[in-house]
Length: 317
Image (cartoon, rainbow, N blue to C red; front, side):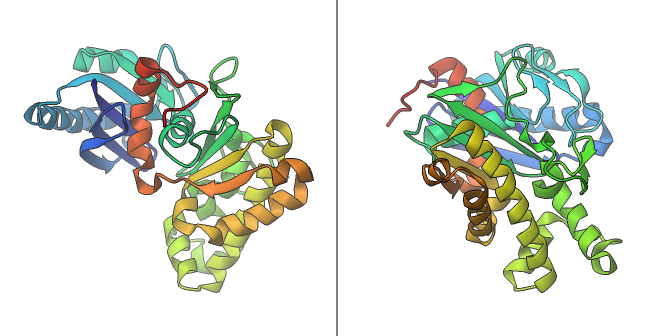
């Protein structure tokens, strides 16, 4: 069973892990991405941490044999070219796959983070055994991955699952190139903007984060609860569109939804059921990611797991 060097590259944090085909993690390092530094500074730090994890792998007798990457899109998956992800400014037409091959001398597999998350939850988490799955991540951005009829679905040019770009309101926080898109209401960066817009006297000049809002809401803060209620309603409205179009068995949501649970999923579920076709809504479970805080680490392995072991219509028991 090959050992995998997994890279989970996000707009807020980046993690480097050593894992295997069963999703087990043996070593891990992480650092703040700080994308404002530009690609090459981030890539240099990524390589430094990856070298250390590879040294740990050697000491464990599990030398890395392949590199697997989970990263936000848009991207071209087979050539591994990154095309200006909204949460990685300056990563314009970056040939990441070739750069990693040159650096490590190992095979490299790259997957959209939404797809990788879908595979992780389908293979090891809340969607095990299902054939029609939507996975959504509420991280810095907001995106998804689709399992349709037991197969990962990437679309004609690897852009399936970019649901954050869908406009769900005429106005709203600006994200993913336009105001009113789903990411602007439900991505971490968008939630920060939403809080500032709804309560400008309190948050317009502060660097409040989605995590801050979540923590305040957990403590009963009325303003934070109001922000998350709007997030939940916008989330449910968009979910109803996906349910009507794709008729999934299960929708799995990671990141912020894992931390907040029914605080956000309860209201989102009500809105989804109000807006979607009744039979389609009844057939669909809405659940937080079962892998919890491990999701990003396990997802970083899944590009290689899929390429080397295959994800079939019947995930392993």
